[in-house]
Length: 288
Image (tube, rainbow, N blue to C red; front, side, top):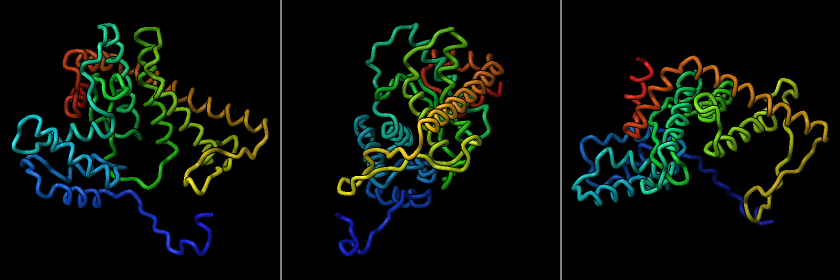
């Protein structure tokens, strides 16, 4: 009722900024802040795809706070990088108690993500791998695109799903065991595979169709459910296709790690040693 014709005749759609927009927004919020010479806002704009204007403002302010806590007179690139990670993954939690055996599992888990992503063509480049806890995550692998995208390829969905399964697969290969550490990965994998089938028509078996109609409460302005407009038989086929996509990605992740087992050990050992690997060191490790 709130958006009936005649009530709001002009509706403005504001999309998230592209790289040029992010660079301009960063420049506005950086005014008056003592940026060091190593801070390159072009690089920061490339590293923040999907950030809203508010996210970018928060990033710049957070970087200034981090610099102030160090009693620094200038905001350095390391402050900006830390602020980006804080916005994406939450604050560091170095006080979290983790046993040595858990630390080893986390190192191989994150190394597994990074190696599979590096091996598959359509995954975004790995920018950082760490076993330092952030937010609710025990460790994480940061992968960022080199350019903005307006659409996603089926092959990218398939590679991204395999990359997300890389941590779980590494646990299976190295420890012959699985942990709860992949719970968020599995949620994302399942959602991506289901969207491929039900929203994007990417299932050859079910064809170029969409399944399920979103129900909205216009007053609240967001989805609250989905109207099922298909039969139980089709629901079973959807579940089967989701399972097929995930299991095929699992097989590809397994093959990628078995083909690069020496690199998996090298990256995991380095993570156990120094906790965090940046893009340059990661690429050197996998090239060796």
